[in-house]
Image 1 (cartoon, rainbow, N blue to C red):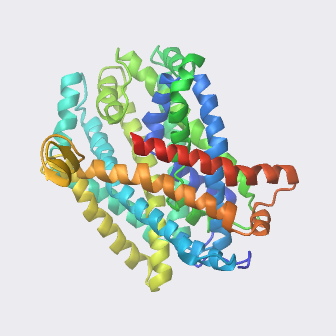
Image 2: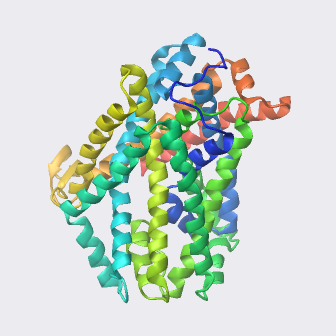
Image 3: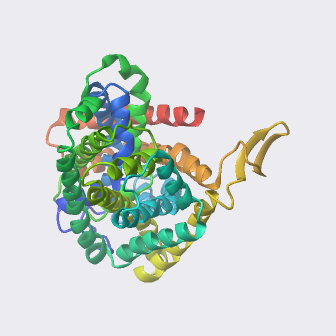
Length: 467
């Protein structure tokens, strides 16, 4: 396939637009709470160093592989792998890796939209002053009241899905590029505003110590966590980066661009930690892992310190922007594929796919209330059951989709992408796209892609399945 082929969907104006797009895809809800929390729990600065090594050995090689394949193929991930496999004399069945990634991205989007809807609801709550002086019991009841109301959840889920579909329907330049040029600078502005506020709480250094105290003794327990997060945080394994790579300018350096995205993703996560934990400590609270930090602990903190309501709005705007930029990247691979396959307009294709995602998302909405006792993969005294109506054991619809995508589909997709790039794609094609001047550096990158990254992903896959 000619390296001068141009995508029918359009092309980014510059490499920096790709950086904004890829960073927007990578920066999501996990950056806001999960990585800062893990850093504090697993050795602070020592964990950050381990994490950066894992990013270099696992995360970045997968992102590089996706970007390289996308730019060479200039199509949706499914058609890219099919075309490149045919050109390399391999089976076109490799395209099924991208099909799995595309389905995985849509499944993630279906519940991601619901969770992002919580942030929209909390923006309104902060504006109304609902959290002023709130205590732990009140914050828990507020969150429980939201998740137990299927109508309210559906309204926010619908609004967020419409926002995402609107961007995709407008196209690569008019929709994706123009939106990301606004969203990503806005994300950084909101993050810096929150960081500036945290410096006024009187607990900024306490938050910094929580994040960066160098404790080597805690590192061994966090190595697997660092490996897993290094893979998942860069939004690889579903084809989002591959389709963004298809719109990447020919002259842009893939190596330096991917490295920049990895650094920005890490900087955002650490800055979020420095911005949030001082607020938590200022309210006399302790950080908790998971949604509880975003939707219970932080609202208490914002509701009980000076200026908290205003910066609570800033925080949940930040969460919404991060979620929106990630959601856009999840919808694009499927839309690009079906536009290529059917010849229909982006607006028509986006409407159908977004509607299907919305319908699947209703399963997540109802799994918190009316269908909370509809459980899958249940093991009880009667044996194993694919589905059973019970209040104990098994997984809800939301938990099942989360498990399927995060523990199986994402790492398996990432593994297949690096194996294709390292073992199926012609070595000269790889060298031509990567365009590294130094042979030793090329050999190092190629070895990471062929041996180290696949081994690391296999460890992640086995670890996730054994949990």
